Amino acid sequence: MKKFVAIVALAVLVILLSACESAQRQNQPQQGGTPDKAATKIQLKAATMTPMSHMYSQGAQRFAELIKERTSGRIQITVYPDGQLGKGERELLEALQQGTIDIYVGSTGPIGGFSPSMLIVDIPFLFRDYEHVDKVLDGPIGRQLLDDLEKANLKGLAFWENGFRNLTNSKRPVRTPEDAKGLKIRTMENPVHITAWKALGVNPTPMPWAEVYGALQQRVVDGQENPLPVILDSKLYEVQKYLAMTQHVYSPAPIIMSLKTWQSLSKEDQELLLKTAQELAPWQRKLGRDNEQKILSELEAKGMQIERNIDKALWQKAMQPAFDEFAKQFGKDKIESIMNVK
Ligand code: EAX
Picture (spheres, rainbow, N blue to C red):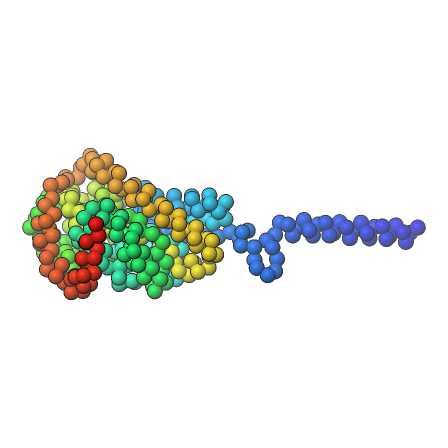
C-alpha cells in the first residue's frame, strides 16, 4: 500500500512538473533553430536637431506611431528632438554610421561630406517650385542620391522636407543682393552654400545648428538662412529682426537610417520602414507648404520685418561666379538634367 501511494504521488508530481514546463515554454520565444523574430522587441532611436513642434520631429513622431501600429508594438521608435543626441547634423550622421543612433531626419547640409553626390541638391535656384522638387526627388535622380548613401554606411529611406531657405539678419532690411553685402552670415557646413554666399559678397561663417541661436544672440554673426518653419520653431525671431523671402535654395530633409541597424532587420521589417517613410513624404512636406502664410503672419506678430518682394533673378545673377564653379565641379549636363525635369 505504501509503495502504491508513493508511485501515485510520483506520477502526480511528474504530471504537474511537465504541465508547468509547457506553460512556461508558451510564454517564451521559440527555442533553438531560428529565433522567434515575431516576439523580439526592437527599440530604435530617431534624432533631429529641431524642436518637437518642427516638421522633422513631427514627421519622425508620425513615423514612430505608424511603425508601432503596423508591428503591433514590436518595433518602438523613440524620437529625440532638438539636438538632444548631438550638437549638429554632422554629429548625428556620425552617430548613425556608428549605429548609436538609428534614424535621422535633417537637412542635406553636412551630407555631402559623407556622400559627395548629395552636394548637387544644395545648389541655389536649382529647383523652380515644389512640383519640380517632387518630380526630381521622388524620381530616379532622387532614388540614386539616396542609394549612394550606402557607401557611407547610411541607408536613405525617402526625401522629406526642410523647405526653401530665406535670409534673416539683425542689422538691416534686405531686398537686393547689394543690401546683403558685407553681412556676416552663418551658413551650414556645406561647401556649395559657402561658395554661393561668397560670390554674393557676404561673409559666410559655417557652424553646427546648436550654436546658431547663441551666435545670433551674442551677435557673433549678423544673420542666418533657413526655411520659415525652422525660423519659427527655433524662435529665431527673438534674435533676428529682418527676414527676406529670398527662397534662394531648396533644402531637402532625407530620412536616413544607420546601415548597421538596417542590416540587422528582417526583409519584412526593412520593407515596412522603407514603405512607411515613402508614404509619409507627401504628408510631411505639406506641414511646411500648407502653413507658409500662417507662419509669416506669426513671425510678423512676433516683431519681424518681412521683405516679400524679392527679385530672384537679381540674386541668381549675383551668384553667377558660383554657378560657373558648380558647372565645373558637378558637370553642366548633370545640373541641367535636374533643372530640365518638367
Ligand atoms: O536642419 O543647419 C541648418 O541650417 C538646418 O537647415 C536646420 O537646422 C534644420
